[in-house]
Amino acid sequence: MAEDFAALGIQANLVEALNRSGIKEPTPVQSQTIPLLLQGRDVIAQAQTGTGKTLAFLLPILQQVDVSRPVVQALIIAPTRELAIQITAEAKKLAPLVDANVLATYGGQDVDTQIRRLEGGAHIVVATAGRLLDHLGRGTIRLGQVRMLVLDEADQMLHMGFLPDVEQVIEQTAADRCTMLFSATMPDQIRAVARRYMRSPVTVDVRGRQITLEEIEQVVVETTDRGKRDALRQKMDEYNPYLGLIFCRTKIRADLLLDDLHAHGYNADVLHGDLSQAKREQVMKRFRSAEIQYLVATDVAARGIDVEGVSHVFNYDIPHDAESYIHRIGRTGRAGQTGVAVTFVTPKDQEYLALIERGVQGAIARLNAGKGSAGAGRGPGGLRTVRRGPGAGAGPGARAGEGTEAPVRQQRPEGVSRREFAKANAARDAWHAANAPETAGRGPARGVGRAARPTAGVGRTGGRGTGPKRGR
Image: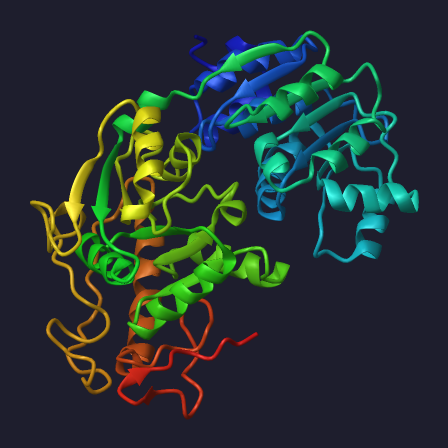
């Protein structure tokens, strides 16, 4: 494996920019795919999120684009807006070094603005399939000069029903293009697309399953449907993560869980497909800056999330296969850091747990809901944890704010600067100062980070909290 990017054939100014950003050694997927792509070979890469696959295709594209030709030469198709935004941000960091123009086009943006930018001569376009078809129908984008095509997170395009749209787009590109397909899993339908549209592709498998899991402490909490929310909150209190990602199966379940967390005073927000683009971007901005401690998300919405400092993943709803499980928990324990993955299992989930354990080739430690581990009551690094809503032992009739304590400071995770850590703690202190007196039985109104005060009249009815208004 090459020890640096120059040995892979990447030009000096790009290598220097990577080094300034602290990126000096290529990851396995980069080492194996970059030389192939520089040779113009088609590549199928099976790699999880967080393995460095974005740079694996961006660097060859940037190095080979001909900036003297003001036409679209490279097209990167992503399944979600979040992933398209993330790829564009990475591309724009390096594009000025080669004078390339990068344009993102996806749903939720103003179409007229996109059209004007396309007329400006974009060399590299990052897009979702639906918006691309819109532009093709309008005649505002031409793909006949595309020589480099990337299908990123192809398995999610399949799961979301976008493959027919993607195939329509592919047919508009040059026949002699170089095609790169990246996918965490490789279902038969994805292999069929590869056979139809790729020329003698080289297959690269760098999933690194065992390497990923060695850095993650995995725990199964056995509970019931009725007790699952209590079990989740108990583990949130026990671990008190710097940043926690909570997975739900559906958008409705994510919304209901968020309401419950708000009603108990947790600093959380939600990410799913029903949110406006502006709201989604706002949520992600605050989660990345750690103003939000917990993000409740669906699998599709969370695709492409790569946030420094995510120390814990909570599978509130168990995934139904091992690949999805590995993809979820792979958002922690990255770049040599350690992480924790907690999966809540009810009696009806046992068959899915068995599938996962076969996939990870080992049994996952069990805990019964209500019983902690040896480190119970202490967060990462031995930090004491506290409840953010009613204090320990506060019953359902407790008064607002009774038993509420200030948030505990976590130790600064590796990869998070002191300035970022201090800023996040200040934002959380402000949130708790504004909301702690109202958290017992009256969740703060739906919002991001420092939530608004509850609407008048939202409170207890018949001894049971009604939760926040939906704010839709």
